[in-house]
Image (cartoon, rainbow, N blue to C red; front, side, top):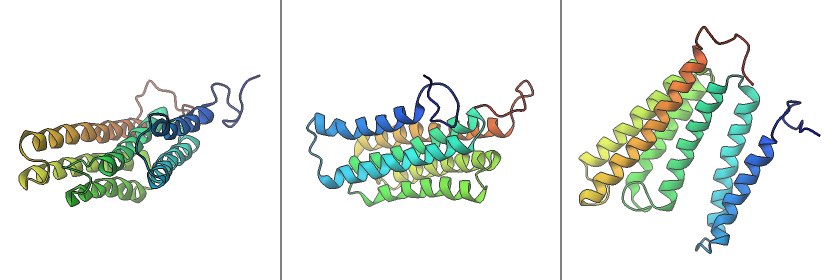
Length: 191
């Protein structure tokens, strides 16, 4: 018997796999005996659940695979920034107030997406703007020495900015592709 829980389409039970992965990720700290409190589990559950919910909505609403992949990378970048800042801090440790600048990067992506009506072309510009904001935060952090001291500060800013900036840029490229598919693609949406 084939699975039809994804709107009648046949194939793997993607929803079950996705939500199962969320459950497994939440079990990892328990299995590894990480020193998590109940608050840590609640925050992780809200973050993972929120990311999963956004991706579920995108999969249901978006037709093109490139749009879905762009959304996946954008959600992963936002989730990663929040997770890193909450766990260990992007700049220095998690108590460094300079880390709050990264919420501005996420705000740029979210606001740009909402202002564009979540249309692929506008989403592309929003992700490119988020990449620029990510780079700007990195430059500000380096110029004002807001991270760790010495080479550690340089390393955390350059590596983090490069990694997350690349996620935002690739996401923007995928949204641009969804807005302007090559002529060789069929005109019907991919599912």
